Image (cartoon, rainbow, N blue to C red; front, side, top):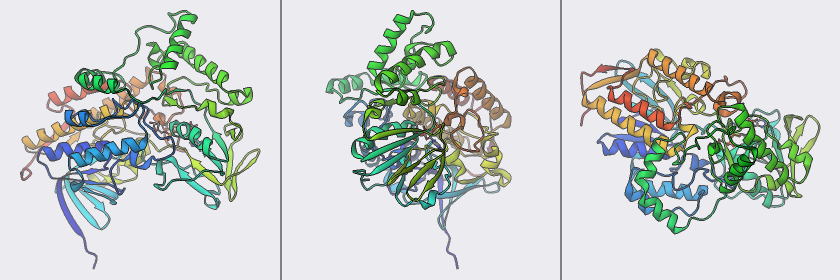
Length: 543
Ligand code: NA7
């Protein structure tokens, strides 16, 4: 007979990336029994899977780390302005060891289903043959973890090697002498392309949408920078907390249209030379809002592309013509320069679309390309994708995917919770500001809020905590209206669900900034969780 193993916890966290690890730490510290389930064989999440060549963070290292522990802040030295994936993964491992987190993580275990039991008021999760029971169900599964490989005809017939950037093998991939094709020019493709080009025999890039990208200006950190950052971390952190994007910088309070063209040129040139993910965007206050203001920086970058890329036809193919900053901003190291290499070819698959993958390569509407390897830098089914991969069912057996109409009817309250799914807390979920921010700031804010909330529920013997339909209706409308004030909804971006065939179009995040969002969340907590319904318990959790 089938043996079932049943285990019970106060809370179950799914995912051992940056968010799952901190959630575990906070809840365990507060005295709850917690178990983390992780599909991989180690910690790291995004930084475990995304091992492609050139992978690095594009938020500056000194801001892209945990801030909750002074000791951890002081014990870690980042080597450079933009840390590479192996260094970030070492950092995550260092934190996991330091806080002794591994003993409460079950690796190589994928949660396939999570069903709310209305009678018992708890969640039942499926992990292989085991059933896990927990009062609180906390998906910490990331926003960009469901990798997207477009369903090209003939995909399975390809005889060479195929890799997705977000599922990169742990063994070293050897490009030398090979004819490599990269499909996709998002953040991942743009980081990988210059590195692969140096090693490969020949590299063909299949580009659907050109990108605005600016030089990262990565460099090793001076010891002074690290010391100063440490000494001022409290103020720096406060700036990140109250900011728009979770970094300690703010846009200059002047319109791009107020400056003379010469002065604008000087400002953009300085930003270009400085590097930084938001530096160009922050040059003026209205770049993200006013088409004419946006056009000034878009023009500036287009001029940079044409002066960098020697072949004018190739430069033309690389010209973006939508609003700057409405797709995820990108910073690079030698991206446009790479198109000056002899062994690199750019194919515009908007003009000549990909028809099929063949045993020996790839065929577009006007040519066939022989390839030994295809790298899919084709991104992710963002935000809702990871949640829909788990069979999540709330009250009345209603599936989350059905409730949200596959995303067309996305409704959350604060991005943390959704009606009909009691005691479930989504970390960095859809309709939170996380994907528009330094993820670490959003992660810590969400988890601190959720921990306070769970403490409140347990102190008050509350059994069932659930977003009210009116509250999520209002929040979803606020997300829509906030995005509508910006240029963001104009782009075919993954923020809009536009990168995936058949995915409903709609803005997937809260665009009001992490500072405003934090204030809203704090007010909700201070009002004893207005907008949530709370049902008293007959029996408190054993302590
Ligand atoms: P992105 O930013 O979604 O980029 C994916 C790229 O793949 C992008 O250029 C897409 O073109 C392209 N793509 C996707 N589907 C296709 C098809 N069917 N045909 C041709 N090209 C395609 O993912 P990344 O991994 O680069 O970055 C994800 C995030 O990681 C990033 O935003 C940071 O937060 C870090 P499109 O632009 O959609 O036309």
